[in-house]
Image (cartoon, rainbow, N blue to C red; front, side):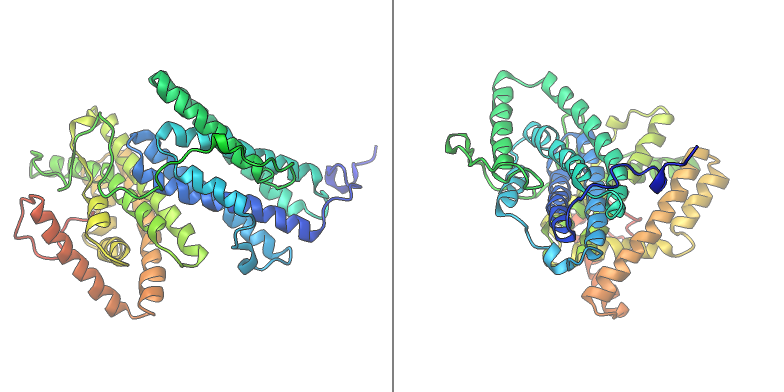
Length: 429
């Protein structure tokens, strides 16, 4: 018996694509991934449906990773990142800008999960069927593993669409049908994601005019929630260890608002290197995960998570109060970098859950929350201290302290109870 040659790789005699054709096709696929990352971050803040809001952050992070993998690969295929970062096709750009402008959650998810993401999966399969499997094995390896993420995204998307359609009116279903047709024709006009398909010009009669997307000025929540700008205002929490544990669970739960704030920073900040957008996509998803930590802990303890007014103040002050780099300075330097101090800081929170509350689940949550915050403090070092302030840590700290004072005034104007808190004692997020 002989072993199959080439470690079982089949179709080893296929001619395949040239390096240039491979790189140009990957550029198109990756361009769509980058636009998906941006669209999902934007609508994470704009969509009120809570579970969809959190899921869009995860999708944005995953699509950022997909883009980054292809970005690294094309450097090995003799394409510069300068060339790679350019829009490869104005028709693809029109498609993705239209998806960004989706007027409703149902229209957005229809565009994502019935048109664009299936087309991305089809593009990967088309690439795999055309590539020379020996010479381009590094790309095919990337695609093989990406398809796991992409198929899981589709499974969630189909479930979310089915849920939304249950309560959709006839007119809403008609609207979304027209929207799907419009987005499909834009995809056809671009020759598909790969550009290999016949380009069919857009039928002008299917074009839909909608308002350009803009980030909301206040947080969005669905009807299950009440919300408040000032964190935990009006809550009756005992001043003891039990009260501190509840406060800690709620603090994690309320991190959906910081996640929305990072989404705002990600979408509205222009002209940064690619790594900034990858980092902020990760940061946004981490904050959603932390919110889910708190929600999971509260549910395990038997709390009705909708009984607590959901904190929205972080996003609201990001959109309304902070200017320029202030929002990310406040998060990464004033809050997360400060949380590295011990005590109190993240280590002490973890020790409290382990040694005082003796709650195994929250101990695990706080352990990983602490680990993530170390990463986020690193983002602050990279993008605030090194990038914005050219390595001047003192200047970065001074800006962060100014944001703390601005926040205190803002929260006082929105009814903060502890009006005489000193600057810097905002209790984390």
